[in-house]
Structure formats: structure tokens, C-alpha cells
Amino acid sequence: MTQDVLDISKMTRDMSNPGRGESLGIKTKTITGLINEIKKGFSFTTVKRYQTQLGLDLKQVADAIQVNPRTLDRRKSEGKLHPEESERLLRHARIFELAVSLFENDTGEAIEWLNTPNLGLGDETPFEFAKTEIGAREVETLIVQLEHGVF
Image (tube, rainbow, N blue to C red; front, side, top):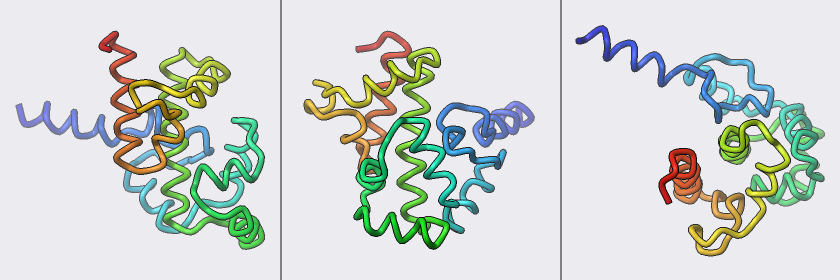
């Protein structure tokens, strides 16, 4: 029985699940590694990769991670985000990755859904609702419910 618990614990730390930063180009394979990357601050190349993947301009990325566009411009010059900005970018990317999984890897459908007001989220878009940690958890719950046909 103890061995089963340990195996499950390893699974939850496995980075192969959607929502672990793949869209950002995160290379680490463990939660501990991801936490360390956040603490260091993500390289600005993660922002560029994500921006390109979602077709966002820099102002939209700044809005997603809740910083002034000029601040994001400074981060570009510095070459990396601050830890709290990295965490917000990861939160945004996690919601994106889970939506892509929900829509069976159809990125376009996922982006459309994420930018469409949803009654279950107080008529806000999933991306808007997910700007806080608690809101992001609600969006994740909604995605899981949709995946399992629970409305």
C-alpha cells in the first residue's frame, strides 16, 4: 500500500501533464525544478515564445501578467521576468495548456474559448477570470467539468 502512495506522489510531480509550462518552453521535468525557475525569473525568451504561440502583441502579454507595457519592455532589456511575473505568466500558460487539451490540441479553438465570455465565470472570459489565483482555480475546475461532461 505504501508503494502505491509513493507512485501516485511521483505522478503528481511529473511534468508531463498539460499545464506545466510546455507552451513557455520550460525544460524542467519536476515541480521543484519549476519552482526554482520561477524564483530565478523566467527568461524573456519564454515571453516571446508564448507571445508567438498565442499570437499576442506585447501589450496583451503585459495585460496577461498584469504589468505595465513599459515594465515588460524593461524586462525585455533585462532579459528576464521577476519571480511574481513569472508565476503569473505560468498561471496564464497553464490555463491555455489545459484549454488546448480540452479542445484536443486545437489551439485556435482553445484561444477562442479562452477569450469568450462565459456565464459560469460571471460572464467574464476565462483569461480575465484567471488573473487571480482563485479565479484560475475556478477556470481549471470548469475545464475539468467540461472534460468530464459535468455542467
